[in-house]
Length: 64
Image 1 (cartoon, rainbow, N blue to C red):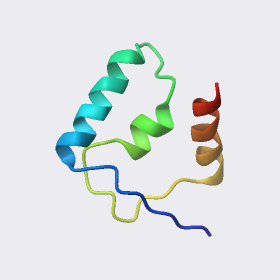
Image 2 (image 1 turned 120 degrees about the vertical axis):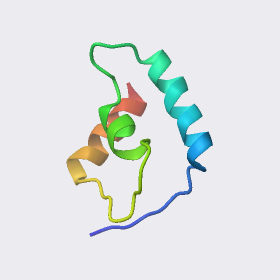
Image 3 (image 1 turned 180 degrees about the vertical axis):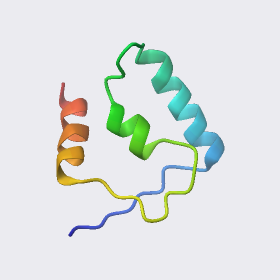
């Protein structure tokens, strides 16, 4: 198991970042489902985690 933490921002900043990304990543399929669905969402993140495959998918989205 590996742990890491990073402060992304308060709820207002995260909402702005999510909105900016959502406007760039047009439907029908978001290009960053892990980022938008697991990292940048409105809610409590206590106990959240990403699997190794989700981390790999997240990394691939930044490369391509």
